[in-house]
Image 1 (spheres, rainbow, N blue to C red):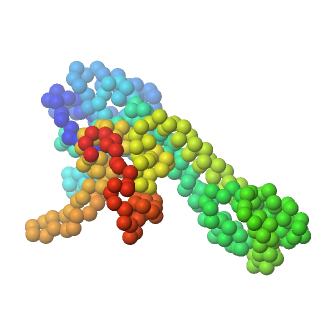
Image 2 (tube, rainbow, N blue to C red; image 1 turned 90 degrees about the vertical axis):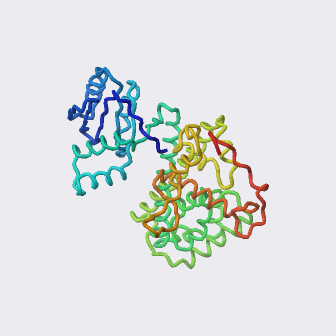
Image 3 (spheres, rainbow, N blue to C red; image 1 turned 120 degrees about the vertical axis):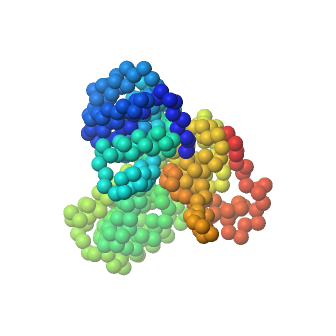
Length: 381
């Protein structure tokens, strides 16, 4: 959310260029005096800077550039000490640096001066700390879920495109349900066709009966797998070979990641059980518990946006065009906001487009009255 920085005449401005081990700090007093500091990124370094700033007989306003998550500890401690903290866009910093110095050359001290320029020109916005605002747990659940989901997808691609392609290509057709535990348990017991054909048909059906779970016509299903194993084109590897052992390790990892994802889903539902915004978001077509969690985790308190256009700009959904003289390009999404929020809403739109009885579905005859109403989550619609 963009917000102009209204500097009071007696404000002490502090620009901090964030790094992993040392922060470059530029302090500017209202009379134009400046001081450059090199602050170690340690608790003692934070304490020394805060003590120095608290000794000033004027309000202090600090600006940081988000750098991975290295800016979070110092930003939190500054805010806890009563010092206002603002953030500057990395893109704005790069553009201003080139404009001020006519070069793409950069270093930490120069970056601190660029941040100071952005602060004094009102081109920063207030920092809303997730831990202080009370949505830190939601953000961590959402981030962890995303990491686990990505790792699970990579593991699934490895199973399909490498291991199954080598050892048991015919089993890929059964990996249709993304949450099918039976598939993993079956491959742990029977990773190759040789493990199946070593048994008689009747013995295999009896051994695999419990591992495939509840199914319609289970006898016929297992007999079909047995026939596929007899005519499999997979490599004839020895069932107890190291290669098959690595295959089982990958299957166990896939199963573990699936269980972790389900545990995070249950955790999210428990944490958000009494959250009214969480329930309202799920009235939107295509928005389920995880997408609603992503939206709230990345948006924070939705009521801090006084107008819907501020939220659109925060997400990067505002329209922008390039105009010069009589020439003007088409308006399109700026895509300069929170990428994870755009991803969450894209997922919701994708899910909604596949649902019937909504206006998002192709060739839908649904009216607006058939779509669950969008509740006002904060401020104006």
